[in-house]
Length: 232
Length: 386
Image (cartoon, rainbow over all chains, first blue to last red; front, side, top):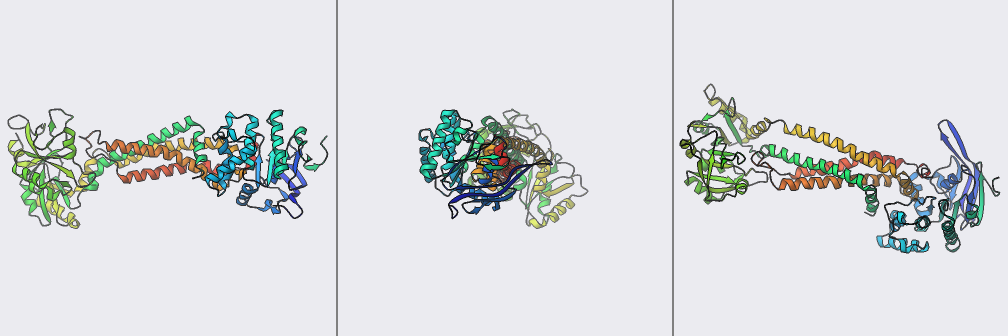
């Protein structure tokens, strides 16, 4: 799932305007971005600069006000809600800052959730879940509930859930933002390994220069525009 | 089925709240089941009443008697197939007021089972009844209630009909009858009119009412009019009506059971709708981020709607079906007041209505939260956690 030139993500002339009452907030302004397949891209920028908004547009969680969002040659900005939901289930894995695991399901069941949307049998789903938990090193914690796991472990479960369907694109929104340095390093190492060894394309939003240093490229978002230089 | 874990997990989230809601729904459907059984107890006779039977009673009131001599005159009226007289005996067993049940002297035992084919009595027991002046036939429910068997001698007293000698009436149980259909009242005690008439201290030659079998149910109105015309302007004018209408009128002396039932249940279900709806609304509100995450994973709007609705239906189904089951079990144990409500069971048709109400309650309670969950915007839902 790549465009002919090896570009997986192409964002072109994207504007995103939020309306709050009569006020219009122009978050992204004519933004352009290309991400090749297999890249581990870090997006940095101050709070409110539009990092998460851009991530949401690339992940098909929101729609641009104007412009093109093309993933693997498909115009996702033109898809219906139903098509977009089906597309996300096939191509996107999401990792959140606060893990967003379902507290009433154990690690195994949490990781299994995206597979419920597939036609796999229970045994096949279980096999995939075991593999994903093995990749993140949590096979021994499969039956544990989120409240019994540390923050780092919960985030690794979150990563396992994101990769269990073998998605094309992994989108991480501040994946280490709620973790201590040691746990954060473990998570970053895991993301690095997924990029290097499994060829996953990863786009990570972060505030942390230490985290962005693990990425293959870092872009900075300021006033709705991307730059290569850190915002001063 | 693969989403069941997710649906079930939604209910397990707040165990106390779910348990209390389940209990509310359980009580509502237990009440529904028992009220339906009570309604059936009052109206069972109407549904089981023979379309080919009339009741002939005193025009003024059921408590006023008619001459027994009317029987022969009614028999001669065209369209009448058979006639039987009954009298309310009000028998009490062992002088204990609680041991009260429906007991009736019957004028012509030979015709009893011809007119009332819903009662089944073995041939030899009928023969014994015809031969024994003190003989009585007892319904299976009544026999089981007091542990009576054929050959037992049963002393009864009647506050309405004392004996000439002042002692208790004595009857020999010569038969135990069963019902041909579920719901047939088998709590009656029938004995011979000749024994009764000779023994009573007063009121000789008078009976309570007549049961009349007619040849053609389509001509019931004409036959009833002919009977009433026969006794018009006499000291004992009659009122003839179909058996179903008579039983319904009798039940309505207490009140319109159906309307009372609907009023109570409407109030109960409205309250339960608010309780279950509030539970679901709270549950969805607390899970906004989680629903956002599910949608972000690719769960479609329709699927999220379905999951919330299933959760709501599962909640009402668990409480409602258990409540209906408990009502069915209670009703199956028999009437708690057999002397007042001898027929007491929960008919399948009400169980079916109950199941429909369970489903409807689940859908109505869940639809607003489900629509809210369906319309949830992913980006907005996820921002709540940030």
